Length: 408
Image (cartoon, rainbow, N blue to C red; front, side):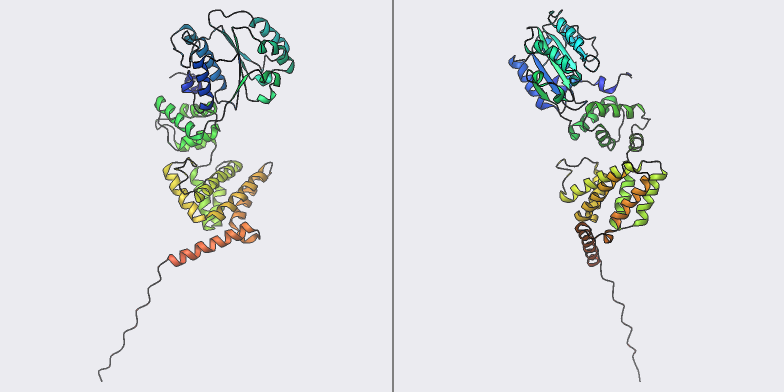
């Protein structure tokens, strides 16, 4: 098995392989078909969403022997040099502006830029972390970016486009990249795991997607770590929750059921298990807030999973449906508000356990509060109790004693 990082082994080589950025890749491919390629581009967006990868693909499309083309042939010298594991091309220069963003670096680039390409159609500069270029450096580049020679192309990639000076931005075609949607990212990770031939519990994928926060590279790094530590049974849910620090779903189920039943003993027992198990109380509260958010949505939209509003396995969805039904929308909304407020109060708290216990006490004791949400919560609980009482079958009446018969 190759020791190369997972995100490098599966780095896209064509625009068709880039996921979640169709609003960028489709116009770029059409521009290549129409042979209307600009001399400078600005790719912006969050980290790990495909900016530098797309810049490399664009360079590959431009310098392909059949190009400019939206689908590089993958067989010519330029395509092989710029392939996933290729040696690189002398005519495609990548510069990390974090360490080469000064005015002297910009002047050196400007002097070298006027020399033609060695063997390709264009000389292409990919300037990564472009926001790190100083104002003097950008001003030194301004003239060559504004009126470059025919053989020169610029691609700027940055996470902070507002820091690129306006005179440079106005001379580029700006393409904003976005975070990848959870469903798209989950399907992609499942495909990668299938290719790697390592079994992965389906409940693990939503955890990885959540840890990656929409970044393909971050999600692939987390998945790589899990696959590297997988045993004969593959990547299990218990292994993933332990390694990523997430709360086991069983603990969340127990505390939510305790809230539904107003069972203080069960709720505080869960708190004790969280602390004694070495879990971070703040992470537990954050995970509990995430669960309550899902329950609020499920209470308002019963078919939320079918509409893509929730991303949970079928067995978890069944439990959550029962929890949403037992708690009700008013109690769920109040609990979510209290947990959210408590999470904010836990930042910098000297005793996280005490804060967690206070959160549970506030959720369990709506009678101690006089606000509208507490009143609605108490009313909803009374209605649920009354409904259960009416639904229960009436006890059978005792049989009448036999009437004595006199034979006199």
